[in-house]
Amino acid sequence: MKKLIAFFEIPATDLERAVKFYQSVFKIKFSVHDWGQEKMAFFPEEDGICPGAISWSPTFKPSKDGILISLNCENMEASLSIVEKEGGKILIPKTKIEAENRGYFAVCLDSEGNSIGLYSDL
Image (cartoon, rainbow, N blue to C red):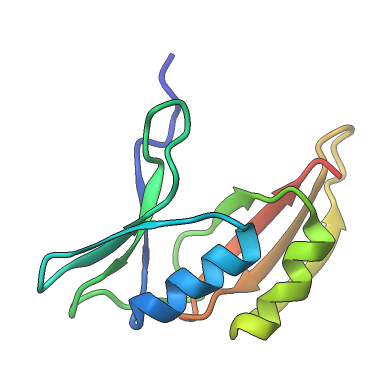
């Protein structure tokens, strides 16, 4: 079976600021492309497939009330310590998932005002 998520886009009003936020929090690099009325910064490929992008367009509107995407992070505390430094806000601190052996989650606002989830086994 294919992975359930085909592709995701996280809207941004300031693509450069959003890329800096995600690169800092998750310690990853983006491939940035500018097509004039649309700009995208692609997340690194996983198994040869790009899972998603940060996207800018005049019609995109970031929102804390939209879809919640949870992204894996290697070290939850380290990632959360960077969130506010990069213009985000922690909404739900590191929290143990009640189901056994399911790890931890947190929810924060990114630099653009989108809610994102962080997930870690540790």
